[in-house]
Image (cartoon, rainbow, N blue to C red; front, top):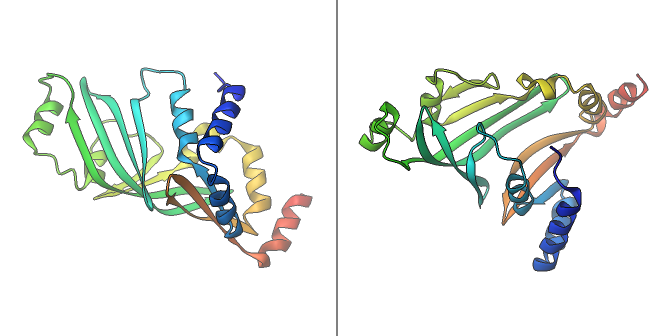
Length: 215
């Protein structure tokens, strides 16, 4: 189901009305080859995404510059949990043939929300799980998603090309072939209540970009 465009525009106008100086923040980042997106936009998308049994609920998104803190209520092996972690994007590689993200997770917390007596609930209540190294816990999950290619200590590496909708999006790949030789993603972080995407310009790659545009 598509998100309601009219509702999105109304929410955007209300955000600008409440935060008139946000326009200057966006402009400041634009001058530095950065795109600033209000976290309220992500919160709106989450709030307006149709519910699903496989999707976490009560999702919260908070800036912890330069990181972002995410919390959600999840069902893990029959145990209802409140999970939260602070995510720092260590590296972004977005090219036509490679789309990987290296994340560092800190301040990870799990709380049991019901009276479950499952093994998972017992481990969490006992404090036996080392939540300072969530990557090691994820590594031993019985069914890891294909997108997860590496998990160690507090680090996760995701391969976005393992997502069929991204891997099979040839229009996106074509755009990246034309753009990434001269402009590539350099960083992703937060500033105030904004998600900031930084870019790196490479003028020497212009011949390759032109060749890709002609092909």
